[in-house]
Length: 105
Image (cartoon, rainbow, N blue to C red; front, side):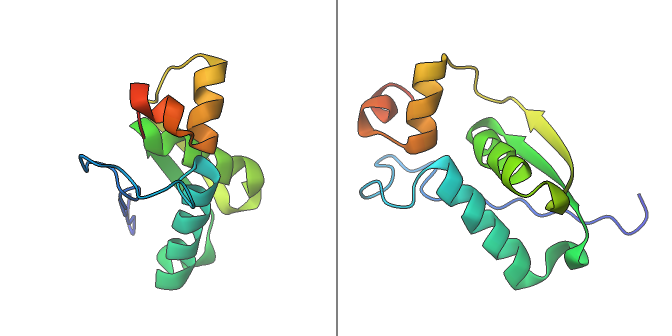
């Protein structure tokens, strides 16, 4: 596409052996807000609706952003999204240390 741009921020503390310190701010809703703030801060997209691409554990924050702010989202693409049972997924969305012992963001 002519004039297309992309950005691929990484979720906080992903890829680290120890994970996050504590749980504050480390849930899907907080990560969605962090990404929205980043987009606004750098002026990405020029205020136009964005196509969000959520990969792996970035998928829940992308889904919540789209659900909470549909006017900001032109489309949503899931790539290798986590497939979890509802009780496990709700623990990931809220970030519980018990859930993260078995599989983390």
